[in-house]
Image (cartoon, rainbow, N blue to C red; front, top):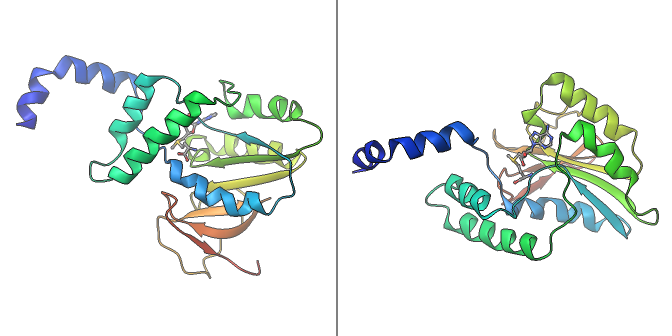
Length: 193
Ligand SMILES: C[S@@+](CC[C@H](N)C(=O)[O-])C[C@H]1O[C@@H](n2cnc3c(N)ncnc32)[C@H](O)[C@@H]1O
């Protein structure tokens, strides 16, 4: 049945495949950030490095990328996109290495800056990752990073703390604090770094 549908719609499928990239966007990953953000004295200015969900076509695409049986993730994606569309944050297009410093400089001076990102730096090559780490290290405030275990240069990975192979490294200011489930379902703290 699927083969028949695919043959019939091949030109449409081809157009989408040539203009879109697959990626996971998971609103539940916000749950990974909360315990860290809750420990920082406010007010805080959040600078997230990532993507725009105000376009309904883009939301449809992200929805299509959620695994078929993950209905909870699909529901959360839709709910999060609605909130973001209703109360959009300041969004700036461009490469993180070109935009982050200027954006950070525009943060309110009475707020603690927190630069954060989840599952983003793997899209950069080694030089790009190193440049970003250097740049974020020169900014005031805090840096919250949730990335794959071999992605962020300079972070000592806590293999001494039990983890799953797919877990992400949650680090604050370059020090691993926890192992994080890739879809935000759990955190395992890594004490006494
Ligand atoms: C896998 S998604 C993760 C999105 C979201 N942070 C999450 O956890 O669900 C990767 C994100 O990285 C962004 N990205 C990749 N390379 C980038 C770059 N050079 N500059 C800025 N953003 C980038 C993409 O636009 C995309 O939003």
